[in-house]
Amino acid sequence: MVKMSIGAAFSETFGFLKTNWMQMLLWLGGAVVIACLLGWLLLRNAMMTMMMAQGDPSAAFGAFGSIILFGFIAGTIVYAASLLIWRTGLVGGEPASDIGWGLGAGAALMLANFVVQIALMIVFYIVLFIVGLLALGIFGASGMSLESFATGGASAGLILFGVIFYVALIVFFLWFFGRLTVAGPVMAVNRSSNPFSAFAESWRLTSASQWTIVGFNFLMILLFLVFFFIVSMVFGGVASAMMTPDAGMGAMIGALIMALVIYVPVVLVSVSMPAGIYRCIGVQGSPDVFA
Image (cartoon, rainbow, N blue to C red; front, top):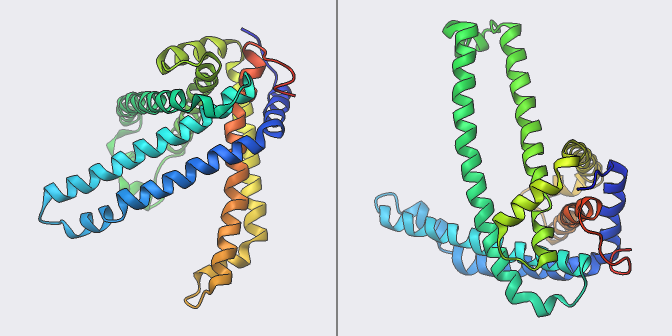
């Protein structure tokens, strides 16, 4: 286990991006195109069916099943592309030769993340119930009623309690997912298809730098928000034009360009972050692969 610094995480993240951005555009772009085509094939009738199947539960469940299936397949494709990018950037080789492994490992990672999120949601509701009982015992039923909030009668203590709980929740999620952040790179480096062993290895590798990772992820979120704000200011006119009833093709093209300008850099950096963290705390790869 190696303790990393936030500066090193920034350096390695953007170093990975600089070295592998072409591969990332190719594989992630291809994954998005395939996912969109699958969405058109699987979902073109699903939404309409759900809207028209008010008296037919079987049709509604069938449409909902199509949506779930699309989500799983699309997630698998995106995870597979990410795994291929991480393997190429951290180990080397040709991604095309690992497509079969990538799809299998991507499906396993997608399913494992789903299981983890379901378990986390169950724990969250249990904690929320306990915290609610605690707040009820401290502030009483009248102090927590909707009327007290509507009339401004909620106590400062209750508001502070809610703020502390909300902040603690954000910190917990940043910490928890930070501990699992290098599971994908671990799978890629080891060419593994077992996400749960990768979760365990990620938990071990991040133990010495867990709060540094929280700080790094928090700073990256702030940078993303600043980036979104700047882009929205620059492209605000295009967004306003899109809202008008007589928006023409130019506005549509402008909106597409705006979406690309916003989301492509964010996706590329987001995929680079786990690789950068892994480079800081994991086994170092070949320097000519990751400059």
